[in-house]
Image (cartoon, rainbow, N blue to C red; front, side):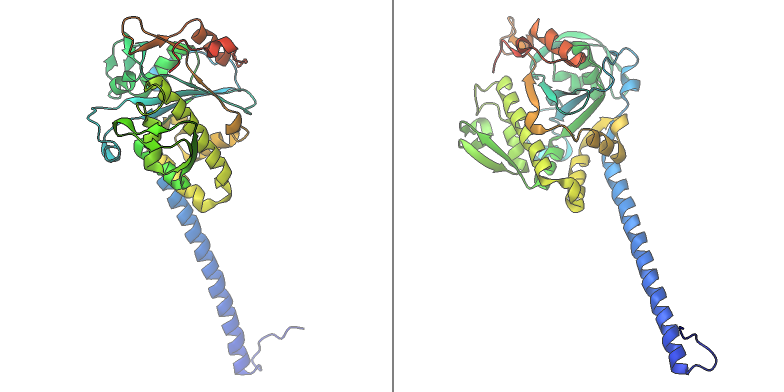
Length: 354
């Protein structure tokens, strides 16, 4: 039987027992404080990351005049890369450019089942018909014809870009994600760099990146130069740059998957902090839990099997420095994505190659 303290127990034994209980209480209190500290730290981290994310309510900004969703289980996400020279972005690119434009635009289609994906790049120099929109201040921006696709963002903001893509394609955009220069650089640096392989050298023309043919590990600054390179690779056109952007996107997705960030909380937080600092999404994605749930639902998509396509375009007959949407190829492409069908080979054939 365990000895119990009593009036007849020696004082030294009673002191030891009281001391042991006191020590146990101190240990339990310390553990409780550590748990509270961890919970508090987790809440701080959650609040911090949540606070990084800006959002736009697409339904409110666009209204009810939107395409109907055809395949409930499929997802269509418009990914925008902003080339604003404001704030931290100005330190990364000192070009004399006012305002901001959607330097990169990809409509990513994830079919029902979510085991693969297709990314369709929309050339920034494409002449399109812009619908009437509301800008960020609620002012009406009138519809216009033959305007450059990347000018829509600077004039009326991301919601109008979504509306324009929906009008072009007839596809309901479920979500949009925008990352600017600084956020892109920070994400690559948080990964420790991204590895790309070139089949021919990049000349570094007009202040661009200079690389030999072969494999290179790029940091954030060089990665930014890589995806913005135009004159130093291929034919120097915007269409040629799209190929570099798609190549880099695949390489970065592969790097994220290879590092298994979900298995390393410290790395995951670092990536999340870098990725959310310059992130704008639609309001349905504008929280860590929503982003995490969406990412989890996309877990089956393998970057190695993602198909990358350029929207079929043709050189404009009035201005050969611009392109127009090529038909019937583009219509066939949009219809396949809208109905979640296999994309016919002829829908991938762009008269303007780049």
